[in-house]
Image (cartoon, rainbow, N blue to C red):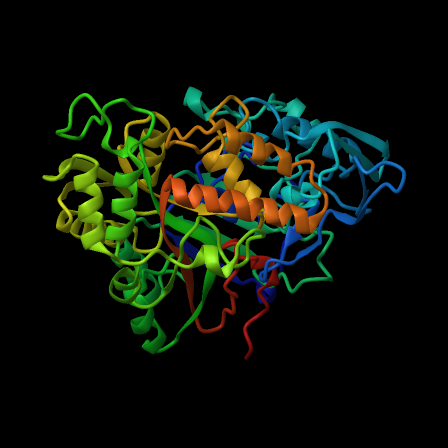
Amino acid sequence: MVCAASSDTDALTLRWARSQDATTLDPHVSNTGANNALLHSVYETLVIRDGDGVLVPALSVSWQVLPDDPTVWEFKLRPDVRFHDGSAFTAEDVVFSLARARAPGSDWRSVLLGIETVIAVDVLTVRIKTASPDALLIDNLSTLFMLDRGWSETHGVAEPQNPKDGGETYATRHANGTGPYLVTHREPGERTVLTRNEAYWGRREVPLAVSEIVYRPIPEHTTRIAALLSNEVDFVQDVPAHDIERLKAAKGIKVDIGAENRVIFLGFNLGRPELASSDVKGRNPFGDQRVREAVNLAINREAIRQLTMRGHALPVGILATPLTVGWTAELGAPPPFDPAKAKRLLAEAGYQRGFTVTLHCTNDRYVNDEGICQSVVGMLRRIGIRTRLVTQSHSVHFLALHRGECDLFLLGWGIITFDSSYVFTNLYRTRTATDGAWNVAGYSNPDIDNRIAALGTEVDRDRRKAAMVAIWQQLREDTVYVPLHVQSIAYAMRNGFDIRYDVTNHPKIKNVAAPKP
C-alpha cells in the first residue's frame, strides 16, 4: 500500500462506533447499510449522492446518453486517479467492476440487469449499453464501487466472494480502492483501522482532516453510548431514540438528526402452506389478505412514534419515503389505527379466537428495533394474535429470513437509488435467480412482475411515475407488508468533530474538517 506518513501536528484520529460491523470488505458481495457505510471511505463509485441525496460526480466527471442511441451511456473518467497500491484507475477497471458486480455471487446483480455490454472506448472513456433506454442507470451506479482489475486477478478475487459458502477470499479482509482511506488493519467484529490516503485524487477538494479512523462495532446500545460519554469513542452512528435528549444535554457532546431514506416494516411468510410457529394447522393465516390487513390496522403507528421512537420517526403507508420517486402524499399516509375493524376482519377470515405466531426481530440493526417489536407484540395481542417475540443479531436474522424460517418479521429497507423500482424489484418481484433478492415474504403476482419490468423501458418521467403510483396502489391493497415508519437517524459526536447526518446513512468522513482551536 502506498501512503505517505502524516506529521504529528496533522494527526487526527476518529474513533467511530456503531451497532454492527461490515460483514466483508469485498465491495460486490453484500448490499447492506453497514458494509456500504464503511466501504464508502475506501472504495468509490462513478457518481455518488451527497449528504442531501443529490447526485454529484465522483470517479466520473461527466456522463451523457448518446444522441444517436438512447441505449448507450458514455462516461468520462477522472484523470490521474490511482488505487491505493499505486496503479492507475482506467476504463478497463470500470469494465471489470461492472462485470464482477453482475456475477452470480454479487448482491448487486438486480440493479445492473439491464446492462448488455460495457466497453472501454479509450483509457478514460467508458460506454455502457443497456437492453433498452434506461433512465435509472446513473442512479443504480451511485453505490457500485470500482475495483482494480490487476489487483483482483493477482489475488485470485476476479469473482466476488460467495457468502453462502461461508468461506473467505483475499478481498474479505483486504482492500484496494481509490478512496480517501486505506485499510491498514482488520479484525472482524472487533475493529477496522483506516489510514488517510495522502495520494488521494481529491486531497485538495475536501478537508480530509481525519488521518486515522478506528471503526469499532459495539452491539450493546448502553455500552456504545457509555463509550461516547467516557471519551472512549468520538462518534456514534447508531444512537437509540431514548438517548437522544440525554446526549443533547451532555457537556461536550453534539447531536445531528434527520430522516434516513429507509422504511421500517413488518413482513409475512406467504410462501409456506402452514406457519411453523402457529397453532393453526393445514393453512397459513397470512395467506388471507384480511388477516394481513387486520395486522395493518392493529398497529398504532403514532404510539410507536411518540413512545417507542420518542418522536423521531415518520409514520408511513407504503415502503417508500418522500424522497422516493413514485411516492405521493396520499400513498404515504399511514392507515388508521382501528383494532375493532381488525378483530372483525380476523373473524371474517375464520380466526375469531385468533392464533399464535412468532415475531422475529433484530436487536442491533435499526433504531430501537427491539423496542418497536415489543410494541407490536402488545398491539397484536389486543386483537387476538398471540405473539411470541424472538430478538436476535442481524447476522442471524437475515440468514433465517433467506431460509424462510420467519413467519412474521421486522425488516428495514434503504432506497439507495431513490426510486420505487428498486423497492419493487427487490421486495415484491417474484423471487428468481435474478429478481426478488429480498422478497423473503414469498409474494408472487405475475401482473405486478410485468408492470415492474415495464418500468425499465419507460423513459418518459411522468408516465413512469404514474405507472409506479398505480403499482403502489395495488401493492397497498394486497398488504404484502405492513409499513411502520421512515427511520430517523441521529449522529452523536464529541465536540471538535462536525459529522453531518447523511440521508443515505453513509457518513462522509473525508468531509470532516480539523477542529477549531
